Image 1 (cartoon, rainbow, N blue to C red):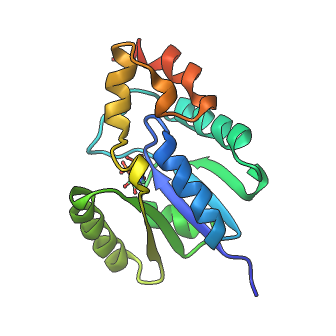
Image 2: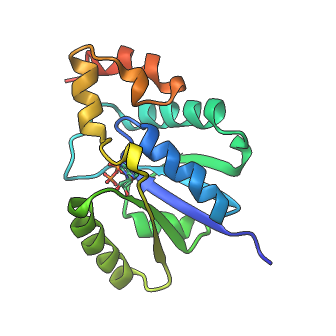
Length: 167
Ligand code: ADP
């Protein structure tokens, strides 16, 4: 049996408990996960790519029991290219509500056309995280709300410090 590697691409602006749950559960199905921190041209990230990579790395190192099974890398182009460069053929994504469904369905069909060798695997969000989104977290951070209920502990101070002053 070979080692199964999946790539979980996202913007992670910021990473929250829903994302961490996808990584944790993904590790039950895969031997390793590469978390790809990217740039979504439809979204204007409030934090620079290298800051988001540093935040995700800190969360992986401090919150996961086996951080060695997860690698965090930046990427700038198409997610399918990044999956291939990482030596994988599986893209891991999370699915929240029916509204995610439409976007993710379109993306996975486009990715399938771009590279039929890559399969997208979806994990349904757990009930308790299905309301979480990075945009909600940015609002809570900006207005000084309690982030501890939504973020991994390792990200709270970072998000407080960086998102209150973000444009
Ligand atoms: P992108 O800009 O690529 O959508 P995000 O960082 O917003 O990047 O999301 C990365 C992935 O995580 C997406 O597949 C998204 O559907 C999924 N995701 C986001 N929030 C949650 C959540 N609360 N539970 C499970 N999956 C989630």
